[in-house]
Image: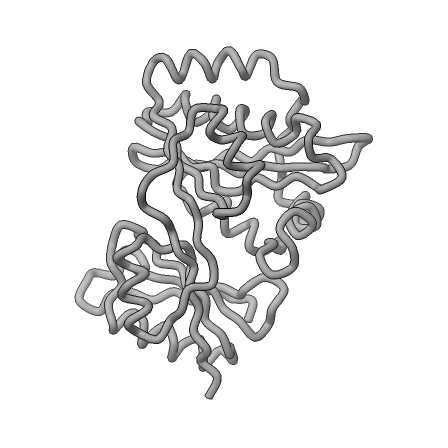
Length: 248
């Protein structure tokens, strides 16, 4: 199940897919359902079609990407159940915030380097060390993250010539996104995550966007503390990842 499966709304022109199925990293029995436009609500037709396609591809479990509350309610009514809940945070990029980001970027603790496609295997090792085998990305899913927005930036931090952390950020429309930040456990509390986040925010702040967004687990106190120190605020809305057993 290495192929990304795309489908289109039957009533629309075939310009862009409304949802995609992707392999779930490290679990050949599961697939990931991604709604391409996170502001649109999934329909029963979408969910039925996704379940059918995933079964045909041999999956026994179908999991969703992070859903906003109303989309999650629709998924729950269609047999999905929550498996994780995330905080959604926002940083308004007004003049004051952008100036502060520029000041922080001038004094970050580590140098960053471009994260290239050929680095994805090592980046996946860092990601799985940081988030565990269930939630960690593999090389293919990291490549998917990089193309999730029209523009992106991917950077890494090295220690003794070995990657110890990376960040992928994106920009689309009027918003910027911290899409993935991972630091190897042996190199935490050394300013690596702060360096990567500040570097990403400095890039986002240079785009024509009004705000930057990031999500993180409810119990990820270290990430929450870092984001709030850098000016992010928690929004009332929480995001949900849901799953459904689709075994025949």
